[in-house]
Figure (cartoon, rainbow, N blue to C red):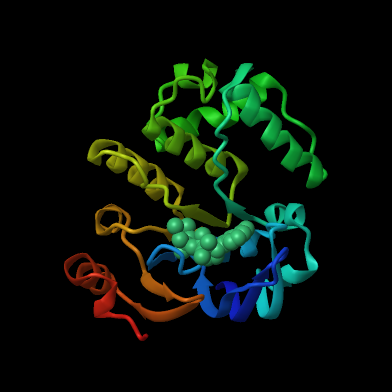
Length: 251
Ligand code: ADP
Ligand code: MG
Ligand code: MG
């Protein structure tokens, strides 16, 4: 079933009106993993942020339809309500707020929007407990303060846990592999794989073949100067790794 259809999407930086996205086309079906690769500055993060409605950007043309709804008619909050999420890095340590309380608040905010009753701490614990395995987290992780002393890998796994808790249909992961050693990467990949169901899809931005060896993408796209210029399978990532972007550049 069709999940996301982006057609000829163009977008500018709101402040300067500089065009960054110059006609992006992308179709995602349920149960697929899409990887977006591309040189620094090619517009990958901008694309992700435009999808979720980041205020720094203005869409100037094209369309993006998610689960049959026009994203352009939806506020960022409504987009997340409908199941489109970008992992948010919560870079701040929040003294005195435990990770489980933080996740409980985030989840309740979503339930409230959906008109569902909030979950108290005990109910929420029952809800989150089975998800810990999925991200390879021990329960004591929940009782630590948000991000306090988290290692790089723990932060990333926490982002995946957020997605698992909130229940995304399409999870957007922007460089979830950055700064991780190979063991942490394997853990994070396991967590992402744990998110995947025949109905959920993942759009992940990465520079590295090694991530794609752990999380098998259905498609790999290469972005160049604000457009997807090539789509294919893992072969693309292998060529990039060996020969660099010049090997597939259209410029
Ligand atoms: P990528 O994620 O592929 O490295 P980005 O989408 O982050 O690329 O950026 C694409 C281009 O747009 C870069 O040249 C970047 O400097 C510019 N850009 C993106 N967002 C902004 C912004 N908010 N203000 C100014 N320039 C921006
Ligand atoms: Mg970059
Ligand atoms: Mg980026």
